[in-house]
Length: 453
Image 1: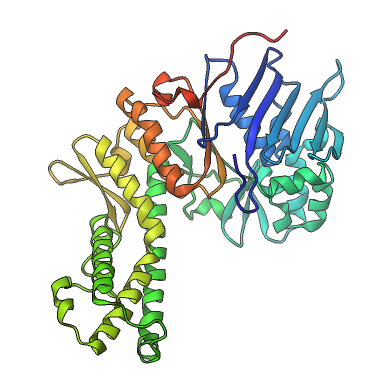
Image 2 (image 1 turned 90 degrees about the horizontal axis):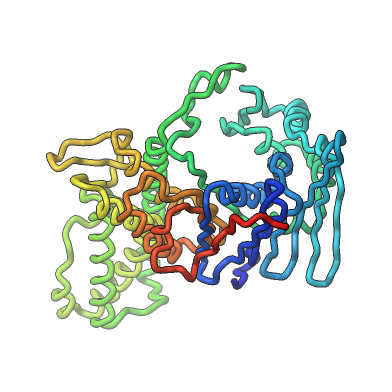
């Protein structure tokens, strides 16, 4: 698994003494997807959560799990590990170790009560003018209206109080801390259809008030609306910038005119891109900064040299304008293609008003919350992978098969590999279903139920 830029990737994950019973090792596959499979109770979900917690420095979550050692091997041959020991009647002792290929080792040892993030978060909040407590283990950052758990607060303490960061950072090896800064990890848990609302409400400013929950499909629909709005705003800015400088660049002629054949190709590409963006709903014919009349390519045959120069600048400018929408449109197209292929008697489209719009065979709108649980699981998982994951992230997916028909489970791997092709991340999947891996048994790692001696 090759490293890209400054990012580091994981080669293997190992745990011993899990639940006092199991030893597991998972070596990640070179095709960027690894599927772990095994019977209930052998620790598939726990392995994902341990990996997520360790890579995010959430040691208080780790010490709640009964195991002896947990180890991650990176693709530069560095090794990060954590071991837990406990004598009868004594607190747990945790040893965190980081070793480099040059055999430089750095470790710290501490007792479990020092990992009380609730207490540390309280100290951080008390020393920050931006934080207010809104629940037993939740604080709101008034600068952004973002709600943070105790773990979030400690993990991002540098945003609030450097003094507390120094106290916390001293509790793990420096090399590991630097390594974690190069790692992105994203956990998609089995419970993914309901989440705490991110919408402004009274509870944000009233200590003790309960947070409201929302259907994830609703939250993601609103998120898509915001993304489309942002992309179109950037498109408008780019259009304005290029239009204002058009005369000057035309007179300068820095790039020179295209040949008639080159111009034909460019204009055909422009028209195809514009049609695609309209088809998937990112652009519509009523938008400003769009040409409403398609160009007849045959008309380019008779252009004079001065006209050819103008059209060359126009073609290049239009292509550059539309490129602003490319990353978003690629993802939207995959989302719509997969959903419309799978959803029965429904059409999924993009809406400027709501983000996602769904219609039945009678063309009447269907609320996203009226989708079946299987349809919601499919939508949420696809959206998460397409829009919520940064490049070069390790994505941990727990039970992608939930509520999905067998035919959808069989299609999961092909859909996932298509998304990875444009989004560039690694995936570790935990599943009970043999249909998820399909004919890609080369991606499978089986967790044995055999008890370690």
